[in-house]
View 1 (cartoon, rainbow, N blue to C red):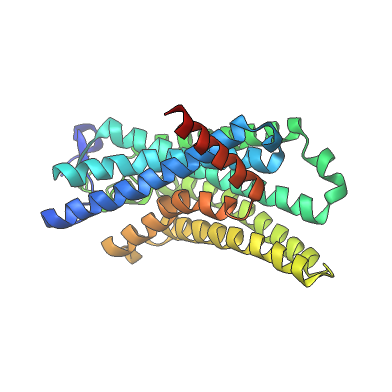
View 2 (tube, rainbow, N blue to C red):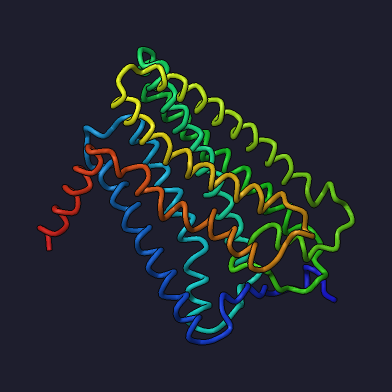
Length: 310
């Protein structure tokens, strides 16, 4: 038995037991992280360097790419290090920092996805008011509000989680520091103190989710009124992948943080964490830019410029 004051480090979940599988996981994580870093980095460079892409949709996409980079860089490098060097340790302060930045970037991603949904709703359902509702100042204020809200949310949840007394060891059933896993180690008898801030955040995010669903209902109603079958197909081909990725991200993260502790298992928790912390940052650049010819052209210009310099 130990308390939180005597814990100097935590033990993260080992992704594999054998050395061969550990090296395989290292290679897989390295490939995913490099792909995510390259794709998101190209989007950020293309939007920042191309003046004709200084529009609300691409501005929010740049913010989404920044949050994706943050998510990947917060969790994956430590997992790669542990797999390569056959260790499980993470320091107490390192765990707190990892938890803070992970919650910060995940929350920012959620808020930015909601703003991007609003952008799509205005562009399809209220195109005549697009310039008024989504001017440059309004876009800057919405992005600043998203990042500030994410920062406050991360600060509150991290401070609350690490203020709880921990007396059930220091082994976490996850490959990174995650709130539900740390709560399993808590010996606090105050459920309000343990789950109060988490439930408050969940209700806030659920309100955002309801807004996203309502927006997409209005979007699909507007799309169905498009007389051209080709126009309807194009609109659905753009919206449906976005909705699928948002649904995957929201459903897995909600289930991870709100499921009863009795439903936890190492394999299920690991699969869910990969689905909401690793897959979206790697696939978002593909989903959100694949069908946009302007962005693709700007990305190719950035790549050609880099090749010509070398």
